[in-house]
Image (cartoon, rainbow, N blue to C red; front, side, top):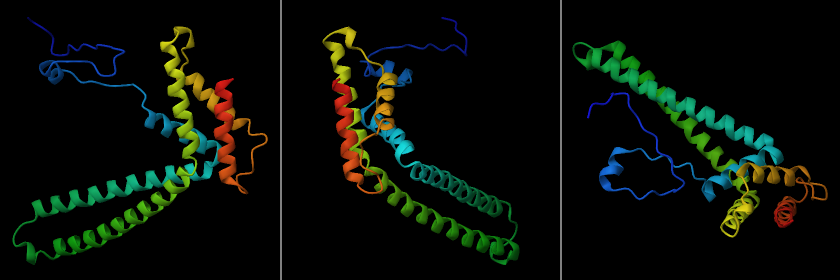
Length: 202
């Protein structure tokens, strides 16, 4: 059968785990857009922290950006080093400019590695602070998947993820009566968990 080299076919299924033969599986790329509980927890945590601790979320974002730049710099240093070694002529040990370049690359590499280690330490600390809010995002994700099961009882009970995210945001915005976050954070977290459950039951 003649076919164009640019030919491609897209098959869409509601089944998150299609049952394909080994031969068929080798010929296709499966892209699963199904939302998972851990994925939703992470998304809800991001929304929550943008509302409750915007500075913390900004620090995490800046740190990830800095970490990525440092990794790129390290990769560039390694690439340049390999190029210099490949293009050097004669005895490497007698090539003064190459030795100076190697020493410079080595010291810069140590600096970048130290900066990356420091960034990872800060990242761990930030993650601990973020995880203080995990009970709210965990409860939210659990509620969404429980509500999603109602569809099996009656198709009228189908709720979109977008609608649920709006409900989640409304709980965070309507924080009247919640303890102040700088005074009693655990009580504030418990308040939001309770309000999230109450709002979904209504």
